[in-house]
Length: 462
Image (tube, rainbow, N blue to C red):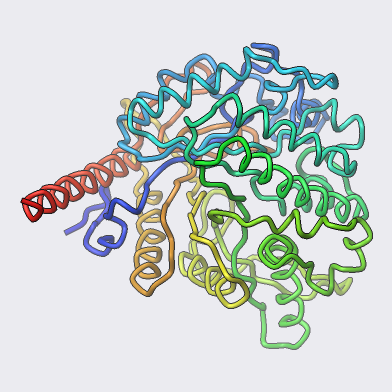
């Protein structure tokens, strides 16, 4: 019988094979800190954090979790968790810190050391090249609105691939282009803080072009690595049965999912985006963007309940049908199944990885313990859905939990805690939460089952 402090493996047998990987994820700006150490220069997030009112309580990522200096301690947490993979991102402005394009070897060496240390401990490095932190010197030249940034990204990808060599198992080009476009350039709630629809259209195409160019560079210089991109989103469900809400839900689904998935997986933009985005397309671009991927990463947190707004555009509304996380997001595990069904209906998919899934709750540290049964239930519910999907034939090969550490949560500053590990941001002391202990127990169970399976194979071979 399962209790609130552990995961039940009863339904998770499809996840217990050697072919399925459990891991955790982080991103550079959210955990590293050391914003001026090792030759690093500003990213757009350093600049955005300095704008009054942009971040809760005027927080910045200057210190974050201090993981740049404490990475060895965090590595031991990964060992304690027993994960098979660690998804982390690289700070572009640590590698190529200025407009000259000169390589900063000290910055590259930091990630080489991390990747090598992971491999020595049997943890597969999953590297994300761009998790939103564009170098500020590129933003000063137009950022992702400037087509040249896509070619700069390919140069950066090549530098990383040459430097890290065969130590990386998975490369992700770009994390969640929808967020960069919609939150960073349309609503302005994320860096670089623009509210410009035309900018959003240009950024869409240049991000996807950058992805394709980077896949080409990585294929040349990291031929044994698995290459892909990470998209995000949930199913878009109409608030009512009205035609207006149904149409709005369909439009939002297309905006969040197909605007990005279709060029990558089909080599074409959906019809509704051809006029606004197509003006930025040059001959050969879509062939580059649709370079074959070895996998597709998907980040899932919640569904979208959609109505037609007063201005005729899709509007996301809060629904009261399900409990919510501390982010105000509905806990809706079946949405992961629903969004995968959308993908399967529309595309010929490569293998899938759930590259982010997790929840923020109001965790409290007391007597060196953090009880977070809500997070354990959240993860269990989503793992159950993944197991059911695999059993029904969906090719999902990994679950990467967001996140290892409580961290800098973008516009929310340090007010939202997603981690399996609690961080005291004043002292930087790390404390494994109950959810982290449960995740470690689940990984230990998987390891025992794998060992038993290997023994049986050896006996059969004899």
